[in-house]
Image 1 (cartoon, rainbow, N blue to C red):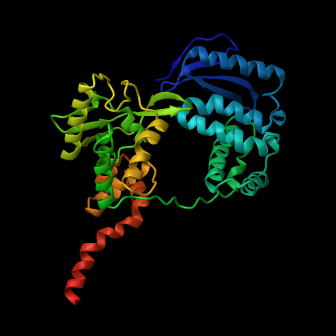
Image 2: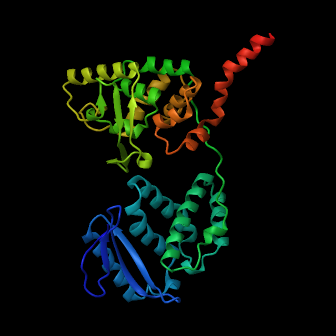
Image 3: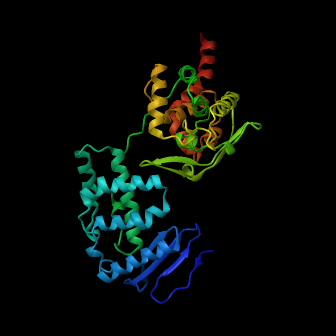
Length: 372
């Protein structure tokens, strides 16, 4: 149950919601139906929330909050990002949102008044973005953020409706990704055998573990005796700052490892000890510290692709390779979903639908045998 603190009249309510996030609100008069109009703020501590409430009350006294017609899209999105988006999304997602707002939305729509925004303005945003050479993916991201932000504006009684509801979401072509064939995957691992991160590549290709999840693995997550590993965090590089966070979809998973991965991890552990490196992290740099994504790609992954004479794929494509190799061995899609940590089976099926033709090969070979 939410914990509320006592307050003096006009101070605004401050409490922890069901998710443990500190929440506060101030009442800014009444709507036409007589119900109170409230503005909410969020933070990690009650002190942070009270500081935001003080700013809200200051804005209200200046007349900015009481008269929505004076609020511009730029002002509203800055407020929304700080008070609504930041407390409820991952830091990496917040950085992406802030960048899209700053680079894409504000230059086109920032000067418009919130109450005068129309579906035509939103549609015009996408036209202008296309003229400037911005991708359908960038347009979709701008739409998703605007729709969420304007949904909040409706809740706050700043606008009567969400104009994004009358706009079609920009269509994004399905991403094509490259995968290794079984022979190419073996060639890559042969090239990586002398690399300090060989065990990491084995886990990526056999279990499809994401890069950030691999960087965040600790020795406490690994049980060599039982042959299992637990994936329960990710290490993200946020504008040069390393931060440990939850896995994608907040989905932890325990994995039973193949013998090739267990053997690689045993050798990796012995090599670290022989180098005198003592680190909680299974995969670390030469000083025992966390791996930085750019350094890893430049010094290890890309050179290995060149050494093995393989296509210049992304690291994430090793995860896709793992999934397609499992499909090729006719592993059930539900099992693949659990191994990869997808939120539901539809994600797995949608991603790898065009690779399912591999599974038809044994049946087709039998038909050839009958009619040859």
